Length: 230
Image 1 (cartoon, rainbow, N blue to C red):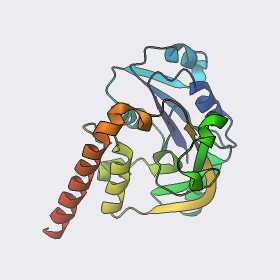
Image 2 (image 1 turned 30 degrees about the vertical axis):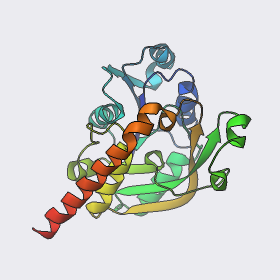
Image 3 (image 1 turned 45 degrees about the horizontal axis):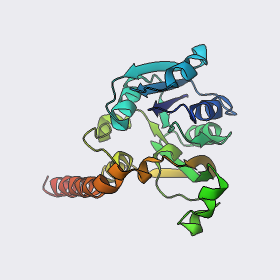
Image 4 (image 1 turned 90 degrees about the horizontal axis):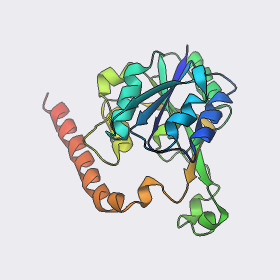
């Protein structure tokens, strides 16, 4: 039983080392670490090459995070897949906790854990608008806290490359619509780095996210109607 870690990255030179190091520091080693470079123009490639054979590096044109994740899924050779954003980090027992759960319950297809924010500076933490989530562990849906049996992608499909934002939410909704339950470990396993250039802070996100959300909801409604009419 093994896990492939997929890290999509675009211009990630500032935090990529920390992300990769958090995988290499796992109590239970990943079978492979796959870095999908989505057309970076900074020092991302140089950083990755410094790890040598410890990682698998694949570069493609800048097609977006969904396309990068889909490439990772196709390249992965393990039975289980897990994703890590290039600016986030795993806690040391992340993979071990999930493997223990799958070994105990081999029929599980998806497992999830808790996450919390990791602030890039005290200033950002002090100004954070969601005060109730500061230093709080949460099960609030986040792709990186989940491990997926690779075979579910044949049932649910790949990440929607037509979505500029919310592609992870769309995928988790499709899991639910297909009746695939998420089994939770109860452990804190993932740190989401809150920094100056998070995607959710961009002007493009502010202008396009609502449209993407409406598309996701429409897709879900259409799917459910299709199932009712079968």
